[in-house]
Image 1 (spheres, one colour):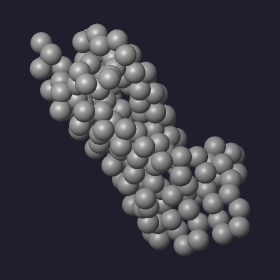
Image 2 (cartoon, helix red, strand yellow; image 1 turned 180 degrees about the horizontal axis):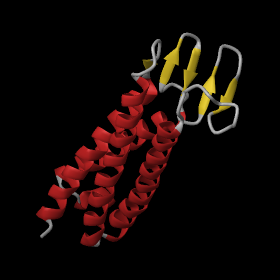
Image 3 (spheres, rainbow, N blue to C red; image 1 turned 90 degrees about the vertical axis):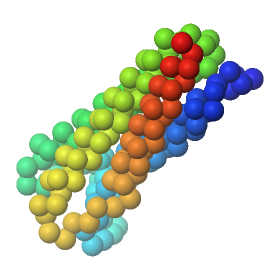
Length: 164
């Protein structure tokens, strides 16, 4: 089996990667980064009590200066791209076993986690300026996903070192 060649650290790293990807992707896609009464906002969608709309539309003006919001979206998109590249590299590693894929995966894990954390820092530091706005589970899932991906990087770095 493909997983038989992994050490315990590699298996834990793979589990952390899967968990981190699930948390990050959920946080990335849900309209629950902040809640203001019956109104909720995510990275890509905002919803009221009866309807939803895209945050990318010209009608979305919830925040005074939206540049930080677009920056958060950009950081989250870059994290998603790094995560997708990491997924492909992991599959190549698990199928072909070249050691260089391990190091590339560690680098992509670090990039994904860093970008996810930066998105959370930008978003959280700016949202706190608005009264009546409460951070919600989508924001938390972005951070939890970043933590799991960072743990995956550590585990796969150990795997890389053990294969020397």
